[in-house]
Image (cartoon, rainbow over all chains, first blue to last red; front, side, top):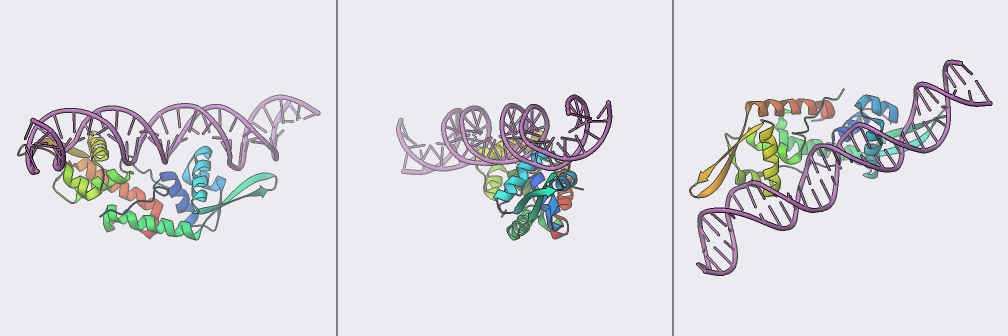
Length: 96
Length: 96
DNA sequence: ATAAAGTAGTTTATAATATAAACCAAATTA
DNA sequence: TAATTTGGTTTATATTATAAACTACTTTAT
C-alpha cells in the first residue's frame, strides 16, 4: 500500500540539501546554508549524515586562506532521492 | 526557495493516515491499522495528534458490544494536506 | 601590534518525535 | 471459568532535529 520513506531523506533540511545538490555540479557549505536557510550547526550535522550514508561527498579545502567545504551528490544519492520521490507518490498520489 | 513542510504531516504514519482518509468517507481504527501497517500504540498516538490539530475527527462508539473508533478527515485536514503537497514540490520539483 | 569583529565551520546540550512495549477493559472461545 | 482475542491507551525508550555554545582562524580597525 504505502512504500517506506527513507528516513535519511525524510527530513526537511536533508531533503533541501539533496534538492540543491541535484541541480548543481557542487555546492559549498555557505551556499547550502544560504539556499536552505539552515543554521550552520544544523547543516553541519545533516551533511555529515548524508555523507555517512554515501549520498553526498564532502571535500575540505581552502579558498585563499579560508576553509571551504564542498559538497557533491553521488550516484547513490541520486538513486536514493529518486526512490524517495517514488515512495512519496504512494502517499500523495499522482497529484504532485 | 523551499517552502516549509508542515511537521504534523511530515511524518510517515500521519501522512499515511491522512492519505487513507482522503480516499474514504470514514475509516475505523482497525482499518487504518491494517492499511498503514502501524502498531496500535503508534496509531493511537498519531491520530490523537491529527485530531488535536483539527485535521481529523475521532468518534468513539460501539459496533455491537465492541468499541469502535471512527476517523474522518476535516476540511482543514484536506487543506493542510494539499498545502503540504504543494510545499513538497519545492523540494522535489519536476521529478515527481 | 593588538583588539574587535567576522567567517566557516564543529561539538554538545536539549527539546521534540517516533515507536514499541507494556498495559487495560471488555468480549469471545475453549 | 480460564485462556485468548479484540480494541484500544499509556508509558518508556530510542532517535532526531535543532539551536546554542564553542573552536580556529582571518580580516579590519585603532
